[in-house]
Amino acid sequence: MSVWAILVAAGRGERLGLDRPKVFANLGDEPLLAEPLRRLEACPWVDAIVLVAPPGWEEPAILLAEEEGCGKVRSCVAGGETRSDSVRAGLEEVADDAVVVLVHDAARPLVSDEVVGRVLAPLSEGWDGVVPGLPVGDTLKRVGGDGGVEETVARDGLWAVQTPQAFAADVLRRAMASDKLSQATDCAGHVEAAGGRVKVVEGDPRLLKVTTEADLETVAGWLA
Ligand code: CTP
Ligand code: MG
Image 1 (cartoon, rainbow, N blue to C red):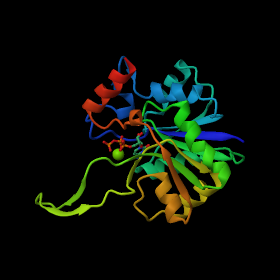
Image 2: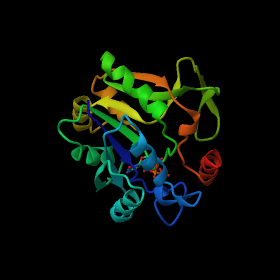
Image 3: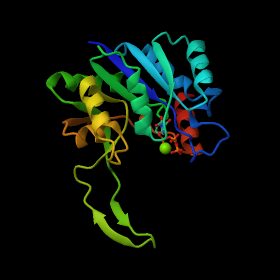
Image 4: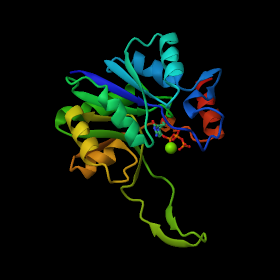
């Protein structure tokens, strides 16, 4: 079974607000992108990696992959306007004989072998996709533009979903090609829209997505 990972790193990082894309922000004393690259490279379940870089940043991304000795990186391509476009660009580079595609946000640096193992396992039971998630702990309210509460949403059965997300390669290809209209913000959303069955397994709080400076400091603290 060949497992290809698409590492999506092409976002602008507007909320972090640096003069460079978020994946080139400093995490400790190296670019954030180095951490997830190294971890996927070392992951025994991953056979090959496609790196999706911010447009214009392909070269520094390739150089970093070379510096880190990432021999599994088969290709580095520029991403698109949305995350879904970036995943589509990455999928173009995945070999036809890939059986499984694992899509991971570079903005979640602390991907682990354990979580990769957890998302891969149920694929052999016939699930189309498997995503890591954490049950929502806080009370959820829908709030209007004026700050007024419109409703309290029952949180039973609600999970916050992370990456890496694993898919049967043919299912993901078909879903990403057919579902161009939904506003899905993750790959699983596209697979669901195309009628696929997606399972949620236990995620990891350390898969925090770096969005702000405080998140960067939190992840740097976990690494220290
Ligand atoms: N991503 C991507 N291509 C895009 C948008 C996002 O590859 N057009 C990637 C990001 O690089 C990140 C992941 O998808 O690894 C999740 O996106 P997000 O956390 O929103 O990152 P950014 O879009 O970079 O940040 P912001 O929304 O603050 O601009
Ligand atoms: Mg974004």
